[in-house]
Image (cartoon, rainbow, N blue to C red; front, side, top):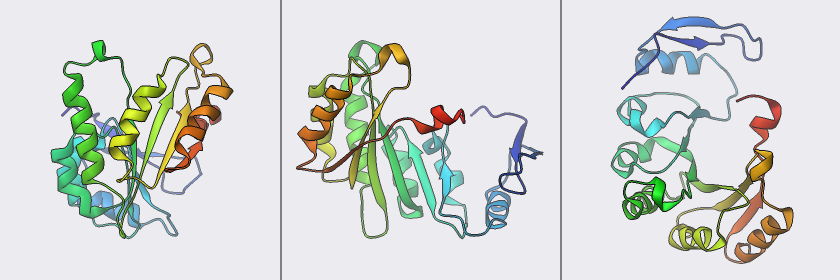
Amino acid sequence: MEHTNYCRFEELPGSGIFIDLENPLSPSYVSEMANSYSALHSISLTGGEPLMCADFISELDTEAPLYLESNMTLPHMAKKIRDHLSYVSGDVKLLPRYLLEDPDLHLENTIECFRMLRTTKERDCFCKIIVTENTPADDIEGVIGAISGYISCLILQPVTQKDLQPDPAYLLKLQESFIDDIDTRIIPQTHKMWGCL
């Protein structure tokens, strides 16, 4: 797996002052750095795809709970860390079939990942779907029908790119179609509005 030579660590949260640390870092050192912060809600594991680092994640020993943000396509890796996670934000990528090497396997892996990381007493798992003006309602319904028993809620996230944004009426119609069966929310991509990513 490729990595950069250095990573950045902000010793004082919110200061904007970072130090460069030479990669790769050990799980114990990352745990030590994370534990130096107080009153954390959770530690976000994001990417790239963090499930590719499942062995590393399984060795973390942090005081704050772990919060996985994943594309949910690597169930064999999800199995390795499911007992280490408190929160799972699973993205469902509703890509056109022609863009996927094996669309059926992609969907099968996604469903299996949600089953593996499903909501339990110890873990909350929810689904986030980016919605464009071209996202077919049938595709969303098919996926949600397969995973609704595994998630606590569905988040419909309108894409930020202006020329692809869905009509607000379409989003509300989607929300209405699911809300009787599962807690369904519409939340914009606020990190892009803030200019964070």
